[in-house]
Length: 401
Figure 1: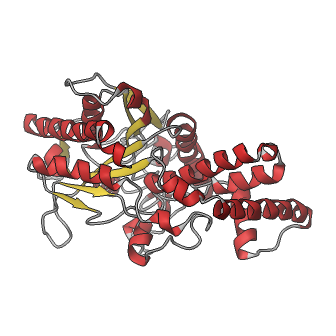
Figure 2 (figure 1 turned 180 degrees about the vertical axis):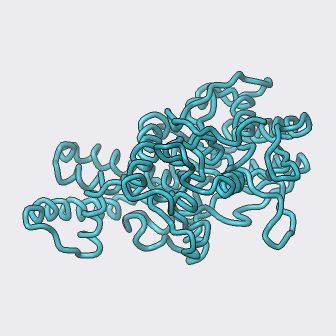
Figure 3 (figure 1 turned 90 degrees about the vertical axis):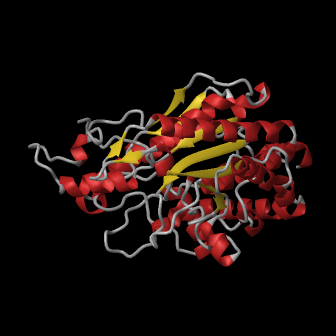
């Protein structure tokens, strides 16, 4: 029997998987480098040092680990992402290789205690059982070795100039009430905004406007994908049974894109600020959407929570405050929000949930089995339909933006 997971080092923790193109209708060539298909929860690696001690003894109940690994993994997501990328004619898809049970890159950094009673959308990156097993230094190591390296790779290699990001996930066949879920769900709404009709307070910088929190994706794109799937006899829901958590890559990327758009516009109008330390500090804070930089968080707490500073930092942070206020005034005076919101170059982030039983089988003990020919065919169909929808969006629908 093949091992359930790989108890070995995971480098790189995130990679681009090249695929061979299939079919005859690919997205237009000029857009192929501007689409990102990726998965974050179908990784299979748990480095050995987090499972066993120096003498080879298990540090945690291996049966519990196996069960949690099965529950947390988005089985079949890589298969679907592969099929979408191949049908689109793009170079490939990106995937996270580290197992979600150890580290969930789709959440904010931190550790959630086992019995905290936190809703799954509000969990942090490290959860049960490793939230209990790992000590402080090991949690820091996991975040630095994997979370930060994934973030750095994505920001350096994948985000720039993208128009569409599709994150492929898989979800369980049934809800907690035993009712059957739709074949697919399209996720475009932020959890906090959906509940309170505004961006959550204290998560991202308040310069990010509430108006942009309503959706992470062009409605035309979302509805085109939904329509094509429904035409192929697949039931589709929107933001059900859950919307996007604020810590997920789709939401963090939207905030990053807005502040990147603002920076380009501001520095074009004010090139003299490009090398000013005060503005550099503010941009670092605004673009710190994964909340990993301590200095960025210190500036944010000074600006918005009025916290005291060490005496040797007061002058530096005061200059940053002046720079921040200039940026805030620039946003209002130049209608930056609507310029970004209505820009044809505004990226769309779309979460695609596929029901697990469509692309994966589990035996009577709950262990996953290889996809059957019928499931391979279903994954191919989903890939072809989604790719066809993206083609139509680029060829026809974008003219209405």
